[in-house]
Image 1: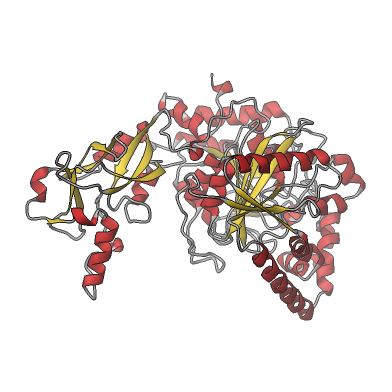
Image 2 (image 1 turned 90 degrees about the vertical axis):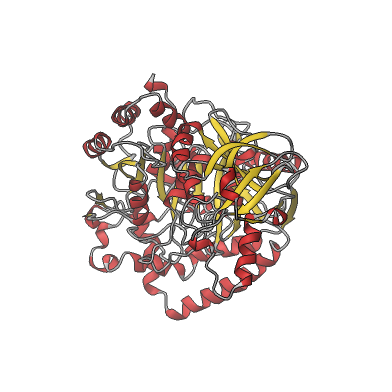
Length: 612
């Protein structure tokens, strides 16, 4: 029954493959919302708009998020919907989508509406709003977390498959920890900020909430892209997500500098999670964490407060009464800061950045508790600022140091509250951080009773409902046609070689140049480099129909003796072709051609047709 259907990517895709309509899913999403009875989740619901989009969505056409319901934080523009940033006096109607929302729309996702937040994305508690405060999905006595409160709660309740938040100081990670879900904070500039109401523009990023690492990553791959209209957009490639290779080196706070504010259950759970990483082969280095705390203090105690002041424009002077009292108290001091203060802050940050870089020099990742402890609604009512600052202990420094990160649930603590680990990595290492996070994700899926499935990211095995496909040419990672694998929802499994019974050719014709793999029997050929990808059975057929002759899909034997499907070439097509079997690699061949001519006519950029 649809009422028991997990609103995960796998669950929804399977249901659609079995004939469920998108309209029925959208209706069910709002039925679940109504059953929750929490008026604080949304600022604007788009019931009729979402249902109309569902009815007119058409066929999937390989759109990776076709029919997937999601919500957007109400500081991100969605065409035709109001944007308030939780300030009613600020409200305007967006006439176009934010860049990221536009990419999701093109991918077939359907926005259910705009969610509540700490006003102007200033806060980590989720209660600084003039609208009803959303309730924490797993424990209503605990704050929902902010500033992306409604976005996290919507996913944790299971009526939105994923959601968009933002993350300047932890707003995409703290709510994830408090509601038992995944919060992906990408490298700055990978997700465009066009159409986002700024908080601290130099530090802002859109973030993604989902039930699992795999779902968050699938959304991230779709949403990411360079935006020339955003001055802070960066051309950082989105790497494939696959299991970590080799020894993983992790830095963690040492016992002397680990802060949990007396919450021993939090400290014990963090140590247990790190111990599990050790059993997986990780090398753990304990470091003095004080320099990171010092960086974190700059965000709200230094010149960066003035950037938040700048973000609200003249509102502090012309209409201060329109601001939430706590928001006003935080950003008003920015009016008295000077350019001298700003430069002093930049100098101090650079000094601290050098120290932090040295502490992390011999490691690949930094792992921390996402939050040091839990904060109750009662506590934040009594002290609106102090407990909020504590929640940012392990998040406030991240964007100042240009790190990427992902918060992942790690099972329940001894007292039943959700545990959460944040994996941090250097800018551009988002895939590596997510892959490591996938090895420890555990526990309930938010506030639902859905069963957690084994993550496909932690294993090289082909899952049920998938087929292994070997590629040896332009479909390989980083080459022009790899996007066709991605659009058919394939995932990278491993690099491998064929059994030594194949000949490899650079086919005549072109551009583009195309390789041909021909099986000749044991002892008569060589081992050719391939990548093995796992593709959903439901998209494999449409993928095959786009493969032009003389290429075809057949059975390819790997060096370990296993058989997979893969690209082969019809025998007649290699007559007169250049044999490159000795090179064993299409990449090596491309490099040799580039090196042999001053202006090559063979390049990755020219390989724009099917060339496996």
